[in-house]
Amino acid sequence: MSDPTSRLKRAIHPIPDFVTNALEARGLAAAYAARPPYQRNDYIGWITRAKRPETRHKRLSQMLDELARGDAYMNMPYRG
Image (tube, rainbow, N blue to C red; front, side):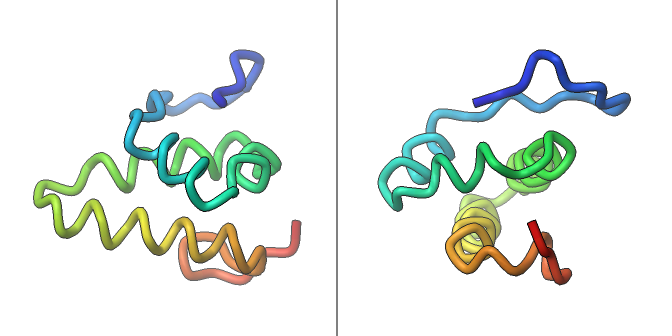
């Protein structure tokens, strides 16, 4: 699901299996792929930087909810 042609200048975060599995389970892989590369990268970095599993789960849930609604990115309004 990563975009090797991205022009991001910050570190690129590989998508972990648990995120891929959650996206597929919720049917949100296409919604994730439709987001700009910087948003996908920011979400993954934000989720994986969490030290506690509870925090990772909370952040993953927020990302999934925002993708499902399609109107938010990291708690900010988003119009795709």
